[in-house]
Amino acid sequence: MTGNLLIDSIISLLAIGAMVLLAWAVFRAPVPALTVEEAQDRLSFDEPDFQVREWLVDENGRAVLALGECGGLVIISRLGLDLVTRRFAAGHLPRTAISDQTLTIYPADPGSRAVRVNAPEAGLWARRHIATARA
Image (cartoon, rainbow, N blue to C red; front, side, top):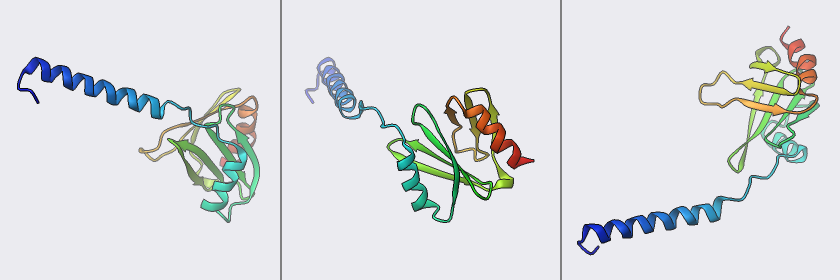
């Protein structure tokens, strides 16, 4: 550095600005929407024994829910650029909040974030499948 505090500060601010600009240019691309085909591939890799009976897809492509033949539930969601799979047994489904077009799932794991699925049939789907699986 130059030894002059003002010039060194300006150089540091310019370097920080260049790093922020570079990060914006590299990481500004939106995350692609999650499709059922991607979810099926991930599910067959992570949980090969899970037989899917019905799917619920978020209209924004953030998550896909798979209801199993056994009554269990699998959540496949995006975490950054990767996919995360969480499996719940029929008797141990997570806490949920259901509205007409939104299903919010709150996993008991404190490190996991809530998964929100927006779809026109989300409320009906959840009442039909999740409520009956708990009872």
